[in-house]
Figure 1 (cartoon, rainbow, N blue to C red):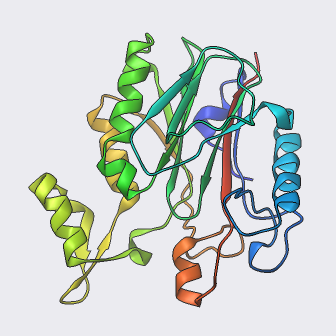
Figure 2 (figure 1 turned 135 degrees about the vertical axis):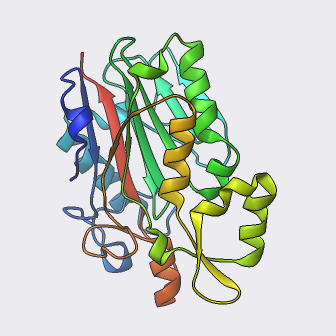
Length: 254
């Protein structure tokens, strides 16, 4: 379990970036696999989600997970929401107490947000596709519409794949340069047709250009740290058929 020092100072909320430990799943999903979309036994996944909820002090029925599609849609709930109805989006916001917002990742970036003045929480799933499509910008704009001041927002960027382990091809690089040539700073070459992409830096800069400066980090590499995290790219490297998902959550206590 990993926690943001900045978020932890706010007693009205609870949050956690869970490791892959202390669950019930076996094999390649060992042990706290929370991926409902994985090929793991669904009973085990639900038990793992229940374990995580108990750790953070909430009821499983109050956990809201998204059907993540690597898009840029943001959903806001001003009413209590049942966890059976997973919204199709990649960012979710709420001001409701005891509703737990969850993100599932396996190299992508989990981003947790809190506005201590409006008492609004947010959770963002940010892979390269969602980030490229401006999921970060859309979330911060949505918060602004809800009355949040950007200077008040506290953001934590969670465990994700590091640049050293994120190999991409030339077409990927050209796609980002087509968006803006300034995106060149997120890449470094190490072979003639191969580059490495800094997903964390790309996302953090998007947070900053949207006027948010209170940023914390969980400096953990999901690819390299196999003892603590599931990783999609590590699964490909090992030629495994599937992979587990890491859970990150945030909740308003009062």
